[in-house]
Image (cartoon, rainbow, N blue to C red; front, side, top):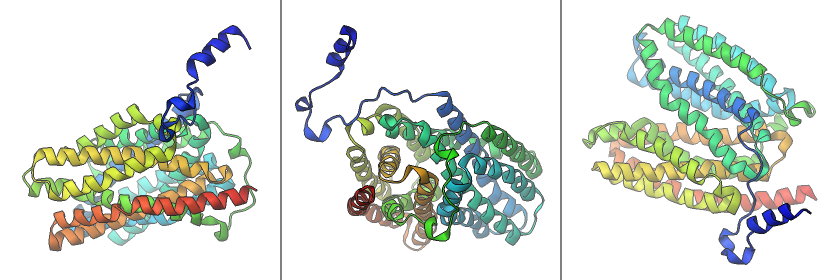
Length: 415
């Protein structure tokens, strides 16, 4: 060993006794993260979410234009979300076997067709059927892209990489609705044409994405028996308990602000999104250094407090405080949870793993949006978000119980 390397080792290695046991660094973060492969997948994720979140805010207006009611306008998102959730494990399982990049290309080409159909279909039931199929294929894109990205993130920086990967969708969602609604002013056909062009760009981009070794080694044919990763699904119920409130916030935070005379109506979303970005940039590396659970548990603990404050918020500062806690909670919880799951599952089946996470997360969002709406209508949105607070308190006990069983099962399988 050279004198230079000895000097570097002496300067960078910290004795374990200098750190409290809970905060002892677990890994070093010297492996390159921002590679061309990472950038390529990040851009692909941005494009896919940019396309989807132009459609989703615009489709309710299209349904109203076709003579549907406000209640019917909300059916599309519910159908789309539940279809995505239920198809997640199955689509991920298929991707693991037929090839993840191949599924991305195929799904993107199909999205061109969906965009055309949205432009010409004028019958509401048929529109919902198209939405259900579209949502199912959407889950295949999410699970496949996440699986490919996970192979391009070094293990020593997995939590950090997943955190930055999530910012692709955050950035897209921040700008896409405004762009989509602006394009919609020129006509529904114009918007659908634009979405078809973006989907074609997705297909071309996906065809040029690099393959990892795992993508080139498909297993034997998929089956229903292996489609559902039940240990991962049980652990992912952790996300269901918190995404229940996420669904309510997405649908009703602006309405709550209006009811309580808090301006601007969009303040919760602006603060929430900004907090996620800043929190992940500042702290994403901590999960890799000190351990994913040390990041996950405090993040989960923030969410009941966020919902509790939102339930009683009548002033702007209370709304802001809730949004900050909400952003910290979600900003830290998902990358830490996903990183822990990847540490304890088969790397050859990562698309199925992410599909299982999608199942739990999207069911929580869809159920939360529906239930909080019903409770809010009869008892007030304050009581509805109090319910979200109570449910989110279960996230830590559920993870503690299911993660212990999952780690033991994985240990037995590895022997």
